[in-house]
Amino acid sequence: MTVCIAAICKSDDRVDAIVCTSDIPLSWRHPSEDLATIKLMKVHPNWHAMIAGTFGHRLRVLHNISEDLKAEPEVTVLQVEDAFANAYKEYRRKLVDELVLAPYGLRMEEFSQYRAEFGDSIFERLLGEIGRVKVGCEFLVCGFGPKRPHIFGVSNPTADNPSCITMHDERCFGAIGSGAYLAESGLYAYRQNAWNSVDITIYQTCAAKFSAEAATGVGKATSLRVLKKGGFLDYDDSLPDKLRKIWEKTRPKVPRAALAVIEASKREAKDSVGKEEAER
View (cartoon, rainbow, N blue to C red):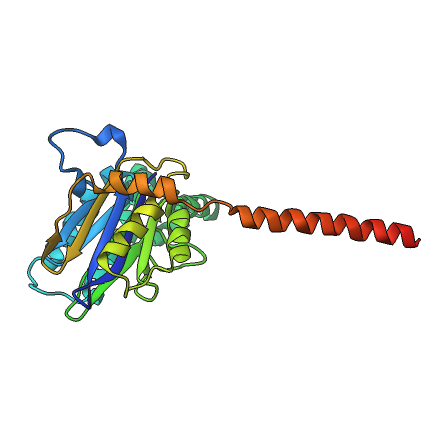
């Protein structure tokens, strides 16, 4: 697995930038690869998608999305959501056809008509297999509508979240992958919000990514991109490594004053126990 993080922030006194940070598995390091774009794929001049999970699944999903959006010079977040939702569901239907129904010469849209032919037992078993088919990747989509930046996630629906789309505009940041929980916890702790500057947001998303490395499968190498409408802000490729050195020196530690207070409290507790025993 992996971790991908995106956070909306401001530059030049306007909320008009998105910082994108992710890990890069060391096995992907190759001189011919643009490491900063391995997990950040452009689907429209103003919209990008970060990918976590089975990386090979992404192209079949993203191709249809790019085709749907390329004719429009500017698109709304609802248009992008619909394009991703439709492509994600269509790809899942293809997986069902290939993994479950191909031996029977059927497709997903035909399956419900064959209950009598299969019989209840086989039909219910196949229905259960269909329900267990999942798309092997998820996306964190970020970009710019006509008025402001947006972030939303695209993933397999669950009982808690029956839609494949999850909006992150309200909190202005999101994360996906096996390190998502640790990354988001870090951003909450930093009180990341859209009115933070680009510089502050770069540090806080990198620090959240470094913390997320404790999760299974999150690589140590770090990619950083700052999106602006129609382009990027340029930073040195070595910036995440420089920030890591600072983060390692300044990460939270237990203050000595706090340990002294705890120790004093322990002594006071012992004294109170001794007094109670003496009074008995």
